[in-house]
Length: 428
Length: 162
Image (tube, rainbow over all chains, first blue to last red; front, top):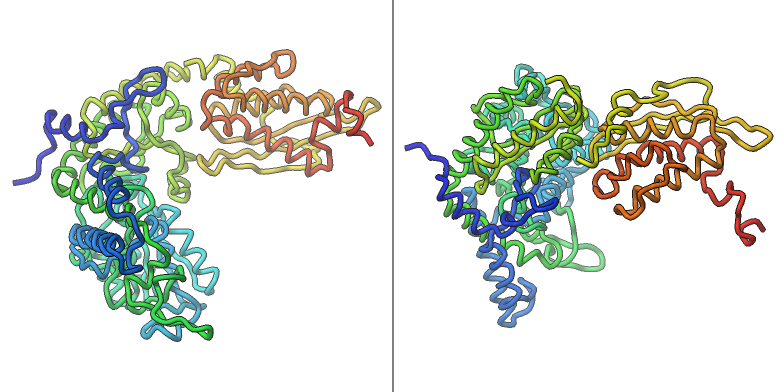
């Protein structure tokens, strides 16, 4: 049986766990929060988990042998196991980072212009002139700028897969773009602007042929689609906790074990070492090699509670629910001739993110009118400036859904949107 | 909505003095990196017996109605005016826009700029309204002009002159 969207009663129960959804904004307008792609709200279960850690267990994990530290270590590593299970992974292959941006930087900084003498297998991470890094035109800056910087440091060349008019990756030239010269290919699973869900399999298959490492930005897919790292077949995968009901300050970089083992460290310092002498140091095995300093313990525990919450709601139902809202919004926008959707207008291979432009009105102004009605959307280039250039727009208005959104909220957006033509004197 | 006064919409639809012109002493390009709004702006200042005068402010801008209206008002309120007066207008605009709504703006000083007073209540939009003015003072600076009102106002405090 295919998963069904949540019923009105179910959504009401879901919303009751998110206290912020009950507040009003701008002179009493009920909050209509359609910006979960930027950051999601947090249910009381996550807030309670964090608070509980500080009230009962607070101490530094993996340090000292006192009772609190042992209990905090168990809670921290237990969180790692629950989060790993959520993405079909083993706990020791899950590295905690500050967020996805840090995870992607960690991946990019594993590469250098020479192998690390103390890390066997790190030759794969040495880049130089003639080598290539492949990204796509629809990347968030977090999965673009670190690779630009890597190319600058090493002399490698950055190439990119173009985007079609419909907002899909144009893979027609994949064999020419992804070649023996390509050492790493980094791309987004679900676009944070277009909503497009990219086909992972053909890119992974081609990367395997040429021996390139595959890095996936899964920020918008792990919270909404259900991701199994063994099915995807990528080498490294990053996501953020705060976009999936979790706290800010926690993210994950998952890596295939042999890849993580061959990766030089990024941030260095305490807890990531094996031995330290004045002359030099050796490093711990993953994931500790990539977790320098006292970790974000409460945040990891909060993220594990978020994962439990998603599992309880059912990721398939979350996806079905968000797609139903997306369908209603796309239909509403299609009925307005003065609105153009940027991205796929159908539901195939799509997530619950919809970007659009109102003819002749800047997205900032559209967003302001919506905000005045209590409708929170994102306006601007959403950290994907090259993608906006590709579509020759300076900025878009973006609505993005989560499990707690309702059909009425979609209608509230459309109703508020209908005020735009009058305010800006458009002939509609 | 009180934010979008008729004057703002008029200026944003029909920006005054738009386009890039010669002569000019400095050209700058400013962007608002959060939304991608851009302005390229040129200034032409001439010295006269009464002091420097703003002869031209020309620009090419892409942005929301607030940023477009603000740069249009800037051109209207500064072209043909003594530089010292233009800088006072800038100071008054900045004071109003950053007042969180406390300062309604003085029409005698900032003219149509008072239509932007509603922006002060929306912190996320203040930088839209200031984009053109930041470009203006940067262009003045790059053309070698002083951009602080203290050094151009007549009523300088004693200690400031020594």
